[in-house]
Image 1: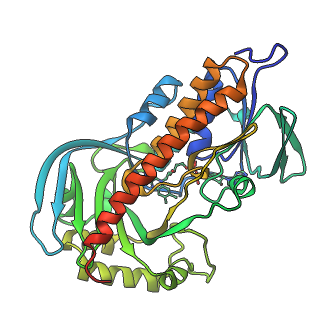
Image 2 (image 1 turned 30 degrees about the horizontal axis):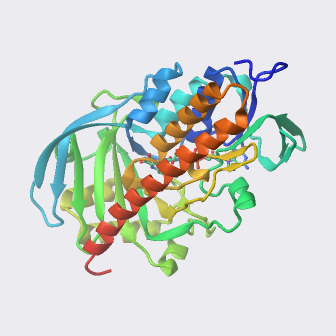
Length: 382
Ligand SMILES: Cc1cc2nc3c(=O)[nH]c(=O)nc-3n(C[C@H](O)[C@H](O)[C@H](O)COP(=O)(O)OP(=O)(O)OC[C@H]3O[C@@H](n4cnc5c(N)ncnc54)[C@H](O)[C@@H]3O)c2cc1C
């Protein structure tokens, strides 16, 4: 892509997680010179767990020479009540992968010289049509376009839209994974080949499915069982739940391995009272459950001159939509396509991208809210 007579489009990306890498591969494919700055210095492998495979992501990977994405699959769903029994089956084939598998596939497609680990963007400004980004090591980098893919706590969003705040949805997601060889007795055959849901006695629900295991293994015997349990938590509860085993308070999630033993014991006891015994057994057998606060973030705008907010930096959608990753992939495809169609007119490309981002982000937000509210209405006590 020869965007300007004298040089290709230079793009600085803040954030080297899923959104940053999706944009990196899509923009490199259209000829842009891309540099990703990720503040985490080492490997980023302990962040999420299972992710439902969506076509937006697989299309982006295929179109940009990345992948293949390892996945597990199921033939249908099982809906359990909280007491016992085998529940109700529904045929609905689906595929599942993991945050680690997606990140690995994307990272492998982004060359080393494009990715700066341990590089934090601390400031960004625009002078004419040039963007200047200041990095934590004191250097400044110049580009034609800056993408803020720096997640739900985006510093760029806070600077551009100080009035936008993350809103706590009133509940948290407890999550866990178990290597399938660690799963006892008859549990594995019960969960294998199904996407299983269980109501909880006082509202909320839990879900479980198999995902790729260590080194992306999808062979039976080497996969992982992944579960998520949505639990109501008051703001006072939240302060306690987000305090890790060293007494440090976290902003919105508690990383794997950091949950205090007393919190894990309380979670397991609650599971045995509230959810189907097979689901409670999964919680009980999980060594290191971790916590994600459910937040809503919506923005009225994503474009500020040559600065674009994208991924979770723009909209944080509820996990019931299984859409956060798909949204990041969609936004990357839309931007690449708009830049390619607009020739040298970067501003027109950004404006058409913003329109589609706002449409998609708002509709996914409303969908997540409707799913979350349905659960809240069903909740009887707390
Ligand atoms: C625990 C968890 C579970 C999830 N489960 C699902 C799921 O099941 N399905 C689904 O579709 N989505 C899920 N999501 C959401 C999904 O992962 C995200 O929507 C998607 O990956 C896009 O995230 P992102 O790249 O925009 O932000 P993030 O993944 O938050 O990445 C932001 C990156 O920016 C870096 N960064 C921040 N500030 C700076 C800075 N100043 N300079 C440089 N780097 C910076 C951070 O270190 C981080 O790596 C989950 C998210 C979490 C946290």
